[in-house]
Length: 290
Image 1 (cartoon, rainbow, N blue to C red):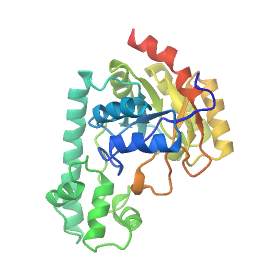
Image 2 (image 1 turned 60 degrees about the vertical axis):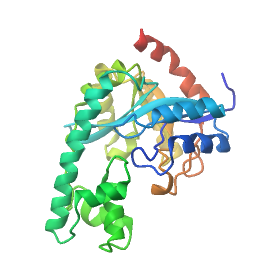
Image 3 (image 1 turned 30 degrees about the horizontal axis):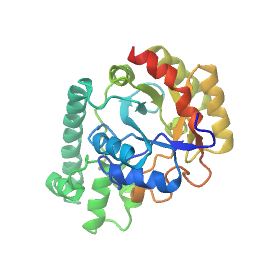
Image 4 (image 1 turned 135 degrees about the vertical axis):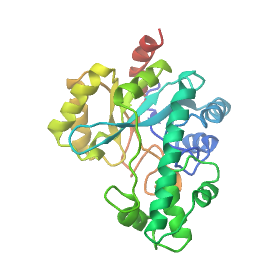
């Protein structure tokens, strides 16, 4: 075990909605003194080849990952996020899965552009695509374009007025089920982790219900360390993990300049994920890959 070493198991590059290159993440991890870092871009494995090569080049353990959005029909929260860690980015299962995700994302983006135009904020998908510069288009790119065109004064205004659920420019995602996402992660040789459980607005008994539902589907872990967690929340998540026999995981959810208040490895300053967390996942990873 790499004693006294810290890691980060939840980060994003410019291949989804971060601002760092995959190699840039590795260089930053080295600068920050991390011993291992996972790249978990949204719905894409595009950056993993560069990421893994950079990890080998600079002596940082690079963990291939992904973050998948899924539809959950219970309570008031329709969308959950599952992180896959230790995946094989070349696994054949990704081709169909990511192609479907991208097709659904394109349909959503087209409709979002039409709705924004309809309410007096004319944008085209071509403009958003050009602004994104080859990245997977997300609401963050729409927000950046609205700001660039002078329709809003801050990026936050784009979400509070137009791009959040219940606002006139918002379009819900077309998402796979939790079972489908977990099966895909396992088929690619990875372990499945429930990401940032406190961000869904669920009461404790509802989170407990969520775990009861996902564990039989194959959920392997839950994030117990996260940038916005208070010590009390971290303790509660650890108890929940223990109750449901889930592996603790965690990370900063680093996005670079898109979330400037979140630092790689340390989150808002107090985050510290020990290497032992990743080490404890190895037996489960070995079992899944058999």
